[in-house]
Length: 403
Image (tube, rainbow, N blue to C red; front, side, top):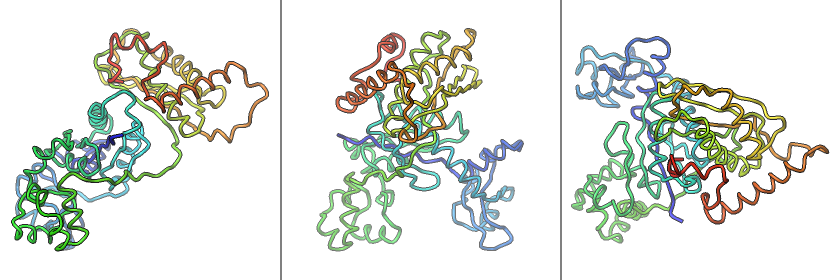
């Protein structure tokens, strides 16, 4: 099976996160819109630029230069201190949002992640998921990301580095020649500064030059790194997304609708689809939920959410959906036009932590067996090969791939 990989990279992370935090705390100016940098202690001559605003960049200010040099280029430059604690908070917020899409996330650095979406598309396309993530980060977290879409980590990372900010780019193997080979060899991932002059002396100026060069000569000159460079230039990368296999504290998903909806029956159909996705993942972890939460966002970007506790901890799709539906009916006002609906389960516990009750009803056990059979069919034949009757009418108004 071909891998489905995303690379999510925060645009100008330190400065963007500082800007968002300052705006939350009442600062009137968005420092992303003025000549500004994030830097070290100006009292020390070694204080350097860690991040710069787009306007600061137009003055020729570059990351890594001293603040003294930066001020020489722009006299009205505003300097703001870094705050690792704040950056960690926003990095975690991004990570938690991404957990709505896959459990296989590699935190490559504080501001970038690889996502293995291979088993989590559930009828959607990888590009649609990228668009959804891009939009949600902008709307919910108030900063922007670039997203690379591909079939391996290397190509996804290369794609995310194309034009910025707030962009989504694909880079599949059939697109390498058009999109990647024309780039300077210095743009290739894992090519160090010291290696570039050596490659240039071999008349290797572009990534294409490297890709068509004799691999054996590269290995002879650079050893294992020569082989790696040649493979990367040809889009070859078989490394896996490395993720922590830890139990989640909550599992959720949300959908930005292709068109606003003001019909509760249609919202209930979509909620059923989301519930199936969430409970499918819940059972994969062999966990049970105690709390159900439903979120709505109107076309005026007003958010509403409400949660309720389940009678007993469960992973049963029908029971969780009934509780979610109950919450939706209490929350929803027919005058509202909804553009986003979401559902999550929280207060999760291990299934083996729950004692079997003498009063477990037969109906509940039947539903558990049904869920087990449906899960096995989805695993074997694909997520969308079997669906519940209540979801069949969704296609009349919303394409299943949008879910």
